[in-house]
Amino acid sequence: MTDPAKVRRHAERVRELVASVVRSQIKDPRLGMITITDARITADLRDATVFYTVLGDAAAQAGTAAALESAKGMLRSTVGKALGLRHSPTLTFVLDDVQDQVKHIDDLLAAARNADAEVQRIAAQAKYAGDAQPYRLDEDDEDAEEIEDAEDAPPAGGDRR
Image (cartoon, rainbow, N blue to C red):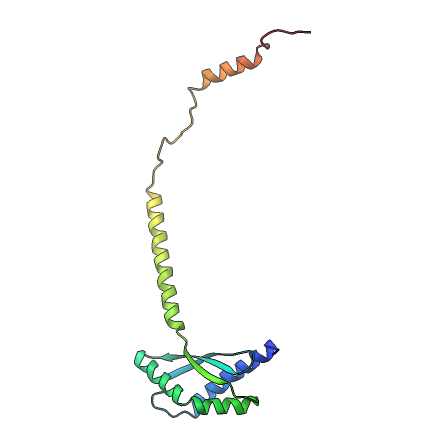
């Protein structure tokens, strides 16, 4: 079984190596403004997934994906040599759509804020469904006196000893 700390170190190293090679050695014109955000490697150190973001529109993202796919062999050999493993890990590149997720979450939070403001506005204008004081106060005085008189009265049937 592989040590999780070793796997994390190798994943971090893969991320650094890929970022370095992309920055310095890949001269593909399709490669856009790319940032390598994360890398994950399996426990058997055979497969690595590299996450990246691209600044630009869908065309820039597609061009960068094609450039990375064409440079995959060179990147894999560089990573394999640097890590010194028996088998070079296969590299899979995944577009990290963090910006889209952030925008989606911001939209959801804005919708929740608007709904909360609407609820507060409705609650400020709300009125009680019944009377403001639902309990009877003055009418119960006669009933209360009858109950007190019944409690003070001797028990019916007298005292049998």
